[in-house]
Length: 198
Image 1: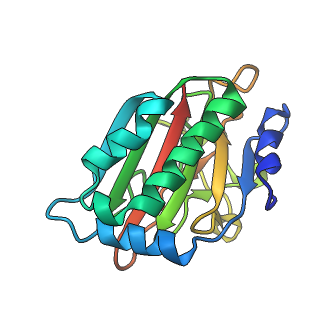
Image 2: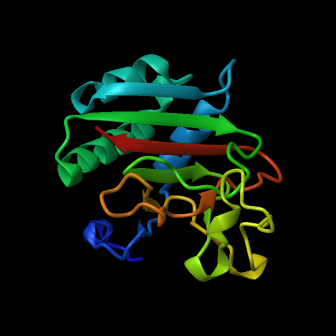
Image 3: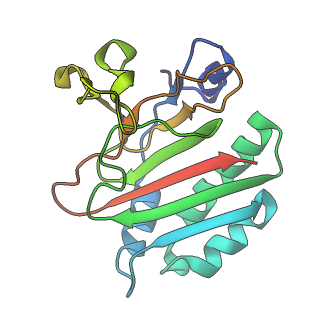
């Protein structure tokens, strides 16, 4: 964990499954996010394509694009950063506002890597290796029911922080994907962004 963009590059170390750049959401970005929650329909955008087309896609899809300039710019910059870091021209992106946890059970992703950040509401939760029982993942093994061995060790990303989560399909990482879940949203809503390179 760090506060520089370079800290995200730590994800390339074989023993690292989570790299975090902690940052705060500024006032302009908060206002742009708030404007999107006042639309007639809930914001649920799934998109895959060239990073160069991302800004235009957001302008077309956001409920309040005229008030969303700071959000559009932030997401576009993150897309460019993913492209540069992983040497890709395309990304898959999900931008979703929810009132409940999207993936409430601890799990691992069967992908190489994913960037996640939360613009509003609680951040993604994850388990340190010593607090997890991997035999309880998925359908689990008989006698292994609880993935979380110690609820006191559940960690939560701060809103605004950028996190790269290494999945099961990262070369050499099978059986070591980061165990994580969506948090409970006690009140209000949560706006979450995820990006997959390629």
